[in-house]
Length: 423
Image (cartoon, rainbow, N blue to C red; front, top):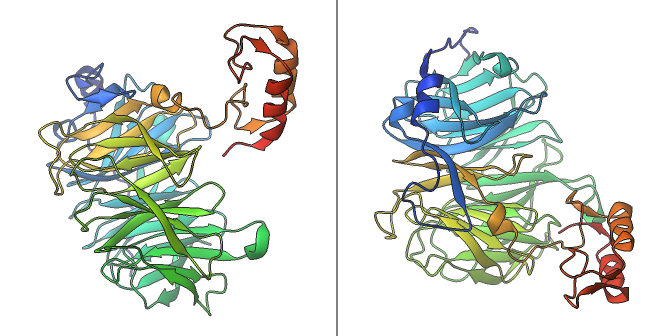
């Protein structure tokens, strides 16, 4: 059952100026390495008691917006200039806005107790955020496969599959009766699974990662399943870019490590390793971009790992949003969002609010793709032309991959060996 469309209004009218004045510069006393603070908005800046998840939206004009789940609802902040964030609005809810995802210009936001909000951000560049539908019931986590146009609700028990053919009036089309605390759902475009839509389900207290084929909504079926040593609560995870590896967090294992699964054969996934910060803080949500793992580890904040060697990630930076301690528990950083085109990363902290971060120094440590000289995510003809233009003695040139003080044949061979998309 749905409510009628309604406009959220600007419940924080005039607050954007407050946000600009109270945003904290530099690192402001937060422990950090190779990550610096653009700005910080506290939960008090949002007139909230606590924060939970976060996500991002980029408008057609290229302006970037942080979305943050709050005790009062769903907050929207423009971060196009990350040093001067501006609170646009908070869409209020009777319960907290725990999790949110984006499809087109719609934001789907909910918590376990509900309600489930559908928010139109088509006019957000003009300061307008509109609540267009409210559905009864709630969900713990939300996943959306933008390629297929389906939304997946992880209830902590079953997973509900919803069609977004009409994004304002979604339609329930299937239920997976197994456990699902969270999910990542992707459509394969090449290899043996080309054309198949696959859900990676993090099955909580069952200790499993279940891989489910959801291509045919009338016939969902289990493709493969696995666990890992000393599993306690299989919480959340994300695939590597090549979809060979799956990085998995366990929220209750008391080991503070992230597990690595080989999922190249979906019918036979298996654990291949783990990595850790070496701190006792509890790991939570993680995401992977451009060969780096961005993990929110509650009391130790955002941790950034270089995964050029995908089974041996190395920590290259951090920003501790909760400097009081690094103890196990559920205070501190809940999540991050590393997918903005600008490279800006946001972190939502339960008591600290929204942190807007510059991670460029961390990403420069052990560049996963040094032959990508123009940083377009691909080693190609422009990189080759750049290398040839620098040919000869050229101390310190980025195309001097072997560091011998000259750009020459070994550098050319390195570039050709890396030809194509970056990891």
